[in-house]
Image (cartoon, rainbow, N blue to C red; front, side):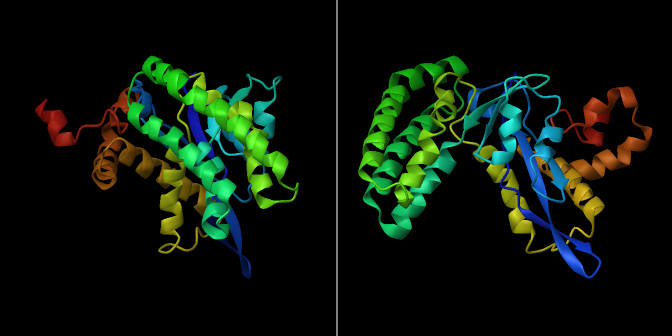
Length: 280
């Protein structure tokens, strides 16, 4: 089963209700095999919900079992249960989120332990940049040789620093965020397909956050669901280096006469403009 990246950091999507507005949520799930040279094309799927309850990702991923990279959103908990049907989803934690806990403390409070933690984690990210795009087996080899010793050392160092701090110290909380999820944080050491972070999903959500400045309201829950569908189409086109406007205009013009059994030809990773297709 291929790795999947998702995030519960759902940007707000304002919808109109009688006499007031309600804050809805947009979720995204991203497949991107390019970091390990995988064969499947990248894709993003967006979903709307009126709140951020855990039942929503359970519905979104009802038929999925396998790896998922995400942050520590509590609503994902039931997805990781061993007796889940059709099978458990295997959690892979996001080092960008773990790093952010320390980075904020280092930047705002000049906390020396947090600053050192950021430095150590940055070395892991530097290794990942070197192996981006390599085959899973090669990525795994490099991680075992170079990243694993750093991870072992980091875990021991974090435990040592935690022992010096009070339980309610902010740095202690940042350390606990990582140590309490250490198995999920180190899962990338065992599977060359995994990335070190779920930044692929975070990048797709950024468009929603930026867009809120230009389109304030979804109008209704149904409008939110339609917005999610449009985000899915546009984001997937962009992931495949396709101009979304050109693709959508061409596909909408061709759909009425296009055979249903050949609908796959219009997907972003298979699409060719109509005039090119006719010439072929």
